[in-house]
Length: 274
Ligand code: BTN
Image 1 (cartoon, rainbow, N blue to C red):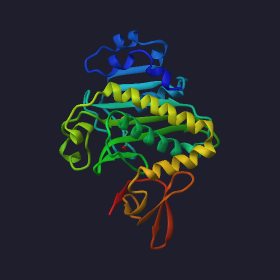
Image 2: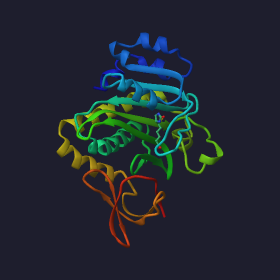
Image 3: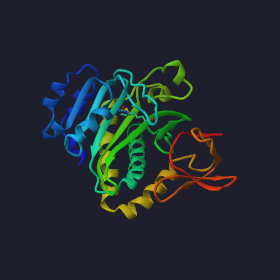
Image 4: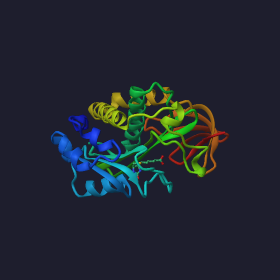
């Protein structure tokens, strides 16, 4: 699955700024053929979705030093400054119905949290569905996209953007975004973080696939445990104006909100604390 990708020294070459990708590839062991490293690309998610449609195998990993058209959820973009963050996408071919995709993307959030905590003991807060926060500001976003039939997923791409060493952000993001460097006052190794991320993604994915029923309950519990906002928080869903108090996640991973008209399920959108 994913862990074999980190064998060898691929990431030492792939993520250190200025290192040629050919050198990185040649330094790696066999699975290097699954790693696609770009200095500059539009979006690793777009690249991965195209490759998946053309038959790229599960575990194919797309990593960029810079994205010129990094995409976020909805119509958002993802600011992808050169060699400052981790911008990556992985192709999965999980044997599951499309209805389980949200759960898998929640699992990716837990994987990022674990990876960050492997290199730095920071109080990472998961914000439903796919944001990771430090002190109330976002440092990581996840974009899960898929190609599916009604009953089965053909392929799913998990795209992850982590702000690691950004020292500043454009004015419009300054109040909302942060990086590991801004939170800690020190630079962090993108190589180590990326290696930790591949391991934790692999762990979460294997456990999800192995026993969907048991792992699902545990996954929802762990997500809630590491989120300050999925229970007991006054929120507003930006897109439709729904307001109420969060009441946890349902069995498919959707957020439940108690409104003046009863319990509502939030299917998507941006949930803002009030
Ligand atoms: C969000 O918070 O709205 C999701 C952001 C996802 C950004 C990552 S960066 C790597 C991958 N490629 C993209 O174009 N987007 C994702």
